[in-house]
Amino acid sequence: GRPLVAGLADRTGESAHLAVMTGRDVVYIVEERAPRRPALVTDVGVRLPAHLTATGRAMLAALPREQVRALYPDATAFADRTGRGPGRPAELREVLRAVRTDGYATEDGEVTPGLRSVGVAVRDHAGWPVAAFAVTWEDDGRDAAAIVTAVTTSAAELARRLL
Image (tube, rainbow, N blue to C red; front, side):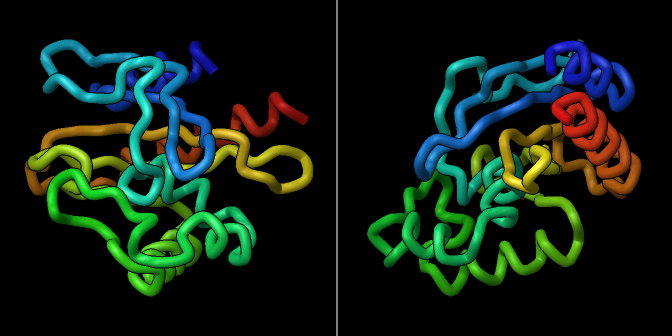
């Protein structure tokens, strides 16, 4: 995935990353920082709560609902970083419903205030989410459509390579 992450950062001019899920967390396995962009908390090896990140939300939305329910049975399962993001199972279900409808996940200040991310799951041959790509940028009010397209293209390419 490293060349795809580097290409994604080059195409968007923003920082890009690839993460995998472990329990209720995502772990960042590849990170490509774009020049002159804000510092991020998503260095390689960093773990963050999946329900707060675009990568985590993308992968959670691709899991069976029963598995998501087992991971997040009640409000005690939800970590908080900034006071934003889902804090109860019903709120997470709404977030994941939007991800399934849109085909990509978003995060807007739930990890770091002032930063936004778009994430797309990478699925294996059985449709299981094995990883997710994301791009993070400063919340400057711009339309994210081009970033969504670039992230979706990278996720589809890695999925194709996994077949």
